[in-house]
Amino acid sequence: MPGAFEGETVTRRAFMNVTAQTAGGLAAAAFTLPALAFAIGPIFKRVPFEWQIIGTPADFTETQYASKVITIVDGIGEAGKGLAYVRKRDPAIDNIGTQDKFNHYIALSSRCMHLGCSVRYVQAAERFVCPCHGGVYDFRGQVAGGPPVRPLDRFYTLEHDGYVYIGPRYSVNSELQRFSPRDPAQPLDGIGQYMYPARFDTSVLPPTNNLPLPPTIPGT
Amino acid sequence: MATSTDKPKTPPVHPVDAAVEGGLTVVDWIDERTQLSPGLRWMLFRKVPKGINWAYTLGSATLFVFLNQAVTGVFLAMYYRPDVNGGAYESIRNINDNVFLGQFVHGMHKWGASVMIVLIFLHMGRVFFFGAYKYPRELTWIIGVVLLILTMAMGFTGYLLPFDQRSYWASIVGININGTGPFIGPYLSDFLRGGPEFGATTLSRFYAIHMMLIPGIMAALIGFHLYLVTKLGISAPPWVRATQPAAITETVEV
Image (cartoon, rainbow over all chains, first blue to last red; front, side, top):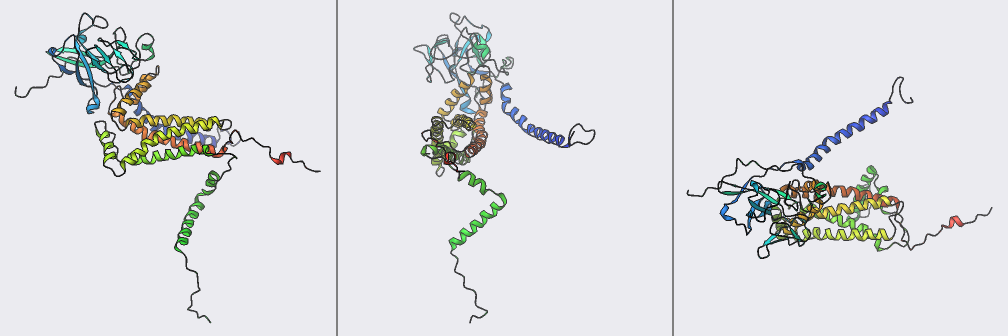
């Protein structure tokens, strides 16, 4: 082989070339890969969600939604607050979809399922209306008109020791069956549930055996 | 007869001439060591085709708006605070209300963003309708398209930073539009937010992308774009007919 001594299978120049480029590549990967993993890490991270007290059973009726401010993200003040519309379950109309003890209170998220603006409830029309692009939902949160692709998200609710607790968000398809929380604009009917897979961090229900106690009333 | 104590008469040096002389000395000193001037001459004193007009300055105009965004952005960063808990909005309010020329610099940045988008499209239209993207300038066009996309990403990430109601909800909507992409959409929107919900990391993430990641890539690509423009030369306007050089048609007596 030209450029090599007797018995050598690779020239010194080629060997140095490969060695230097490998060393450079390793050095670059040593800071690039951790930085990239650092940036995409939150996709895989499970965010804990605590049960929150939103009132007592007497605060809610079957026919009217009560709006409750809940904390979606802790520690960032107003930007982390969200609105939930809560009422008692009405067996006459809330008879489809998943039924269990987390369903005795219907808690709808105010996040529009078109692109995530805040819907408001109009009692006279018994409709949820989105100001951004005209999404309309009926009393059960199912789409009554406009661009939304699925019914309003819901929150787990739980009645315990005379208080109503609200838990993490879940999404529903048009049959009101439970799915892990999806972003707005991701349909869950038919092929939609496969085109928009669940997160890796699909939130598990926080344990119900250690619920936060209601705030103590001063002077008692 | 002059005595030995007489100094030879030299005309007094004007201070301006002295300054020019000093400046040239410094420039020469640098040039002797870097050999930059041939490259600069190559870049700036190149031949351009006949018939070019003001439409050919749109690219330079875009470059200067980019520089405006870079400079005003750097100085805005001195006062801006990417704090989701009210601090971001307050720091913008402080820039607008209290900082000397703050509203002006902020306005330059804000309106410059729109001007940049407009100029990019005009520049793109000029290149398209003049056919200037054709061989051998396809790569220049492709890099230009990447720069357009990056500029849009700058607009998207920068829109959140004032953190008022409009930027907050526009970003919510924009992130959710990213989430509509099949299969990778859910992960893309989680990446943009830095988690399943809009939180403190979302703002700092947008801020880092807006002020460090994309500007760096854009500066590098603009450099490459300009290199290609200089290397390949500017195309003539389509209405200028190519004439055959006289040398080819010249007949030679033998």
